Image (cartoon, rainbow, N blue to C red; front, side):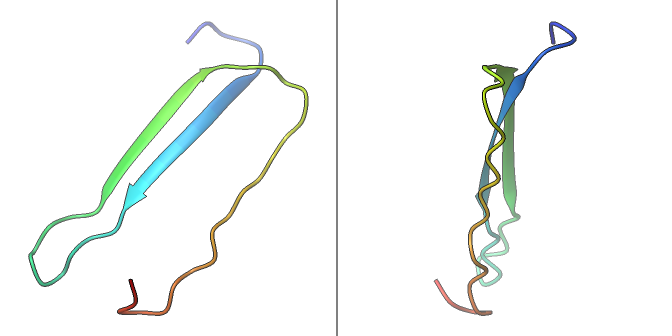
Length: 51
């Protein structure tokens, strides 16, 4: 990273498939960006076993 300043963070998540024994996958990307405003996005949790 370049050091001080504003950065953007993007996170992709794939939940595990318990029946197929596949793990969860997380991809975290951080890169320089504008610091105009902070946006906090949260997806509502799905009920257990739901898709």
